[in-house]
Amino acid sequence: MTRPLFDRRTAIAGIWACLAAIALAVAGLFPRIASAAGDEATIQRTADLINTIRKRLDACGEEGMLAVSASGAPRARHTNAVPGIAARPGLTWNPLLAETARRHSESMAREGYFDHVDSEGRTVGARARAAGYRYRVVGENLAAGHASIEEAIRGWLLSASHCRNLIDERFTEFGIARVQSERPDDRYGAYWTLVLGVQQGTQVMSSR
Image (tube, rainbow, N blue to C red; front, side, top):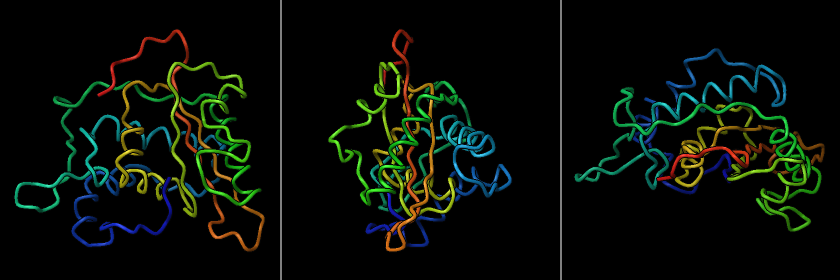
């Protein structure tokens, strides 16, 4: 999960200099679209951004997409060259994963919590099955308080586990949802859910 405020070293300028090569540059490849998740423009933008990352990012370090060199200076772990990067399938939108994402974002916005486990004690696997998605592998990224998909993805790139979900070569499909809370005292306002999966019977690559 990610929140707009990070309690790690991501606030320093040197981190953003390293992030710019992929987080900002990738976002800059496409014109910004001010729209809510669920419409075709946002679905396409999410696919474009994540699939570009899957092609260009070689690995995720402890600071998300950063590794630390021998000198202790941050070093971006990415490349524009295809050789050396694991072949990863491009993600395509799946309506059942989108429904799974929408239901969880609605639940968090309505009930005022931010967690991978919902108020009924279910994780993403149970929620995906309830939506009718029969998966071989499934994963989930959450974000809260972000105004755009670009901001949510930047937050995920700064988290090692969420970054790894984005580039996991086993995943082939995704669903994305953003739900705005109607509660005036809500601390986050917007709740994002990204669900990644691969269906049963699909040949999957071995995960690193």
